[in-house]
Image 1 (spheres, each protein chain N blue to C red):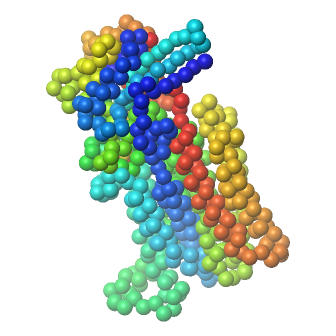
Image 2 (image 1 turned 30 degrees about the vertical axis):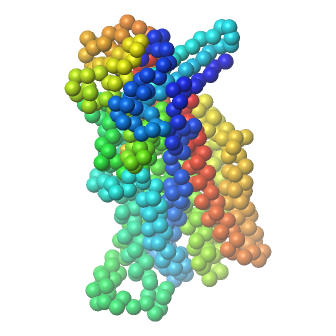
Image 3 (image 1 turned 180 degrees about the horizontal axis):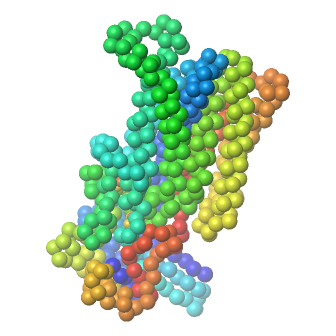
Length: 173
Length: 313
Ligand code: SF4
Ligand code: SF4
């Protein structure tokens, strides 16, 4: 997935869309919006990022899960199988992005890129809802997918690549 | 100037404002694991060297409490799980990449070993003990024959268990404070040290206590060396690890760590043990209890401080 930090206005619609689509319990969220302000008035620079699990290619959360509940699913999407998760919290501690949380029902939960929608050919709920259309989703191995095209044409960055997890959420800058 | 804010208001319980997912259960589990490893290691060591009668407390008496310690430890781990009804999944796979997994399996092996070891010595420690059933006696005689093998297994697995208690933390690169390979040896040595302290507590024999005081002095010296080494490593590393070290060098954990762990848990008992060795009379249980206290504190402080250390972005 790629997120255009220049188009995002920080409305947080993606957060609400996700909470509604995935019945995220009240008080929790799987995605969130970060606002970065650089400089001092009047020379300010603003960056807005809609963040979520990075579906890392070398994900510590999958590595440290003792039961295999956290695993790579179709297309490299990182998913937790709820009824295999024992709630040990190892994956929560292992994620440098703090993208996971413990669901009140006991298992660990996080962004799934709306795998249930993607399987039906739909876009993830946050992507579909965004009023500025600032998110691009697709298969990075397919050069014709919207996300590949955006990454070809724009400059981008990933968050803390030095943490070594090979994050797969790209921010267009 | 740079300011980063989560404007959509993320406040996930136990995650924000900083990670707080592991509470007292995990450090307690790690302390008890290290303690069990320490006791079993010295029991096996002195048995294999043929010194079981000189070192009665270490080989026979202290191991009596290990099964209880391990059961409490496993129970603490169980309490930490948030999806308790599914805990059995832990024992459906072995995932070597996951310290949580192979650690749970190590405990699955060492817990029965500790039961067997305790059973083999229970008659000597409690002379009135009676197995009551013939089949229990048969099992005992069976294991008596293989005592050497059991001792070897115990020696090996206790080292694995001791190192594991540190690796459980050090495998997390997301928490810079934990992400140092020194934690494995540090927790192993600390576990061995608490093991010697327990042997001293149980021992009534002056010579045995003296030997263990000597061993403990050496272990404490190694621990201090590893701690200094750990901070040197942090301070020479990347910004996130410098920040992690600063939690202890001026940050919120400065006083607890240097006072409770280093001064009270290491230096003070070492001085007392040294004084005892040069013939001052000091009640032996004081340094031993301080060592145990330091061992608990080390794990609690590292567990909580580690969750405060992170990759800021
Ligand atoms: S962002 Fe965190 S939860 Fe998501 S795949 Fe990476 S390490 Fe795992
Ligand atoms: S909390 Fe669940 S998903 Fe996370 S590591 Fe433990 S078992 Fe795996």
